[in-house]
Length: 276
Image 1: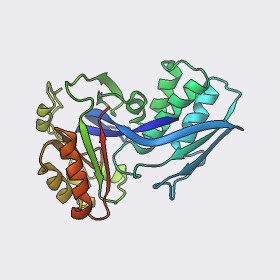
Image 2 (image 1 turned 180 degrees about the horizontal axis):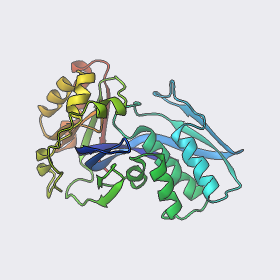
Image 3 (image 1 turned 90 degrees about the horizontal axis):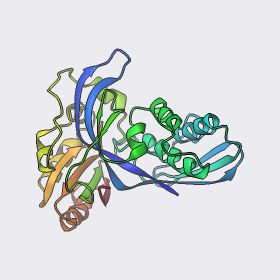
Image 4 (image 1 turned 135 degrees about the horizontal axis):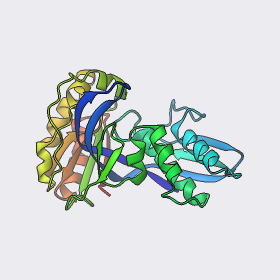
């Protein structure tokens, strides 16, 4: 079994539109201890089935990133064995939490072990880059500074980050990435300076918050409420949204906020966890 750790962007600065259709960004990746779950059994070729709370409507065929990751890894190393993969979809879809990228990265990790492939084999990194801009960061699932498309990575050592109580909340509205980036106003508001402390993250930002909120207005009151909770260290939208997160000074504050979410925002999905 492999966990597809939920990704959050502690900050996300959009710097420019690139000629290839992507955007040049600077971001700080971090990962929760929880996420989707992926298991593997013997099979013929590559097969994928999807279950779980958020499985509805997901394609389990060759276009799925998990299926693609498995197929490309199998071909790259001429693996004769087939595999039947089962994805337990526990995180909301199109939510700014890594989603398919985290699932694909989990497939690469799981199958590299199963097929006795060195986890640092360059072919694995190349597959990750082909599959999507976030897959490389999700492959390591450790704090990192991402630049260019988000796939040029440098490790980040931020004291106190690991184990930080984390609350994830999604308003229940899927939000595709492309329309959010398309709504960015094109203004470069400056680089992302590496913070020396967790508290210094407050000076950073997520430049996609405004265009995401224009598409899903529920983000604004959710963010405001999270930021006002006792013990909050940082509250921000993750990625292109609509999920928001709050880091807390202690688990008691996180758990109190998690309990209050259901009454304050009925219909929201909520997960109380910690950073890896």
